[in-house]
Length: 545
Image (cartoon, rainbow, N blue to C red):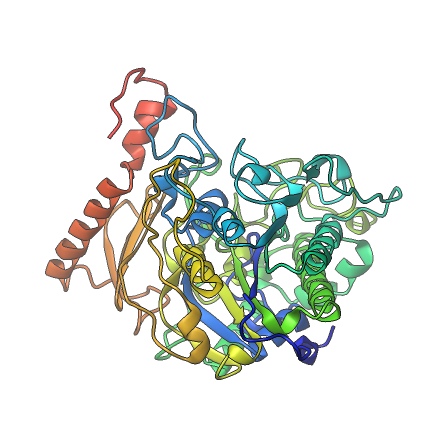
């Protein structure tokens, strides 16, 4: 679908409650889309950006599960039990046990109470609680975190009594099928004549990197140029588009961080230093990734076509984002055979089979460094490369200045607040069975009109990587950099190259106090101690806050 094809059709009255569609990509880097500087073919999302608003400073939670919990509840992940991943178990502190239902409502629950048809297609990744237990009437997708894109047996339709599509052998590809069901849900919303909330959470382009060979082949020539050349080209396009304020410098070619798999950090090598066989293998990995993004974009176009055909597009708000920064796991060349560092250089006929059924690949830190261009660090980390999402808002004629770029700091907790605001829902009407916490976010709806949203501090913590953003200032630390606080003026230095902590110790002290007050309020515990005490099962008895 061409970029211009996102234009709608006339007929929706002002009194109608708007449809709301939240589209989430998985492990998509800040600069992977064309409209954020990338070379991947994404005309549909580029078209949404051309007719909508791009957010350049939308913060996620640096990892899949916590980000999804924030989107759906409008609360910080530790408040709802997802401080680490899906759930560590009942012996862990309250902020880490698993997705809670006693202190929050989801967007689906709140909007369903307000007359919306609620549906979800895609990746859930919030533990044992199912989407249909948290307000979604219809669901199809992957309940876990990642799996094959070719295997229909790992995807579920809920409720089980709902209409099930059938696919012949070899026809199943997850991104296509997730969209098939999303379109079914769009048509169901039209049939019911109800406003619709659709959460479309693709598992693309998360590993295992898998795509049809012919789509991968289209990108091989591009990525044989190598990660250094591609990164420079992205940086030039980002500057030409005006996606960065005040002309910061691009972060240097990065390092492979230390991890459970890598003992010592080490630099990403220059592309020119690699052997020809290794270059070809790595280019193939990135070509598969690009094909997955291309296919996702094409499928979003199919969804928009269905909205138009059912007369719903003009009255639909679409929000697009990625759950975290590009995935650098676990070393510069990626992995095969399963998550870790087992890496195999594919040559000759093996190359053609990469990404097909039965394979398992990832692209590694070298290409993740490109995905995060021009920002510093990656998924897992609270530095900008890990925590900044490419964000797009499309809302038809309600967008005052089409194609605008908005540099205001916003946050995944704002998604819930936006949905409550534009749907006219009460929060938390109808949920007297639980003590619902107040939402942490603010509505992003004013940004469609080019207006300012209310400023407030924004916080994050994941695996000991932590930050607080207060106006132009950002205080950040990570286990990778020794847990020491760093201070940046994000307005002047978005790529975090000039640490001002020593120059402004009073500012550091003030923001550190803010951070620990937030951490205490939101059930955040110091990560190294948390792992020692609970991860190693040394403490059998603990006291809840």
